[in-house]
Image 1 (cartoon, rainbow, N blue to C red):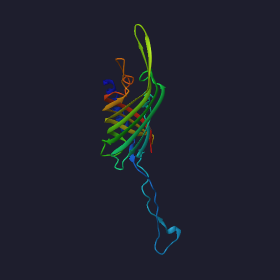
Image 2 (cartoon, rainbow, N blue to C red):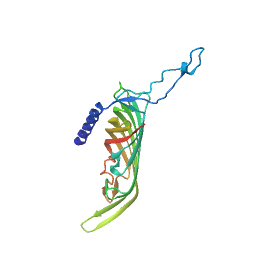
Image 3 (cartoon, one colour):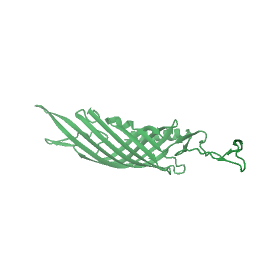
Image 4 (spheres, rainbow, N blue to C red):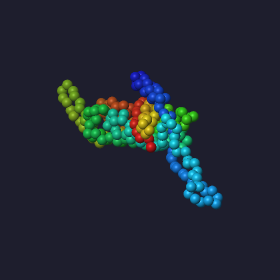
Length: 249
């Protein structure tokens, strides 16, 4: 756990240092160009028409364009085969953003939890409200943020249980097992925009989770825990560590 915390803190520091050398984000929600012609009284020739100054559309030199929407892929969710995508939208004040994440996995066998788990299918959902701490610049979705989050996870699977004794070996298959969890907590992260449109986000957090269903099985006096070896199905305190790469538009 200490190594994970140290790794995350180091990554945050590297992101912050990298951001210092990046162009200043130029916050803009939309651009529109307007031109108006004015005529001198009594004259309507083409050469007497003047054009009013256009609305400012260019951005400062050595800057990047930061827009309010982001669609991102979360690669660390692939540990247990879950393909997770998120959509994030910053508010007009540019001091917070709402992120919604949806994930899905379907595997014939998952070695992450146990090779005995078969026909594993899982759905995952998370909602996080990112509160950006760089209030003076108001550059959401860029910068350091804290975010309360709520998550839901549900899985169905079969479990092949093999019990060996001195005298015999028995195989039992538990079919159509189902587990679900509800959890929430707070996470801290850092988000940057590179190459004009690529969003990079790294985050970590703590929380608490309640797991229900067949994540534990009582069988002939034995307490079987099919999902207990995994990181995502811990009943009680949980630790969140993740990253995302996406497109800002």
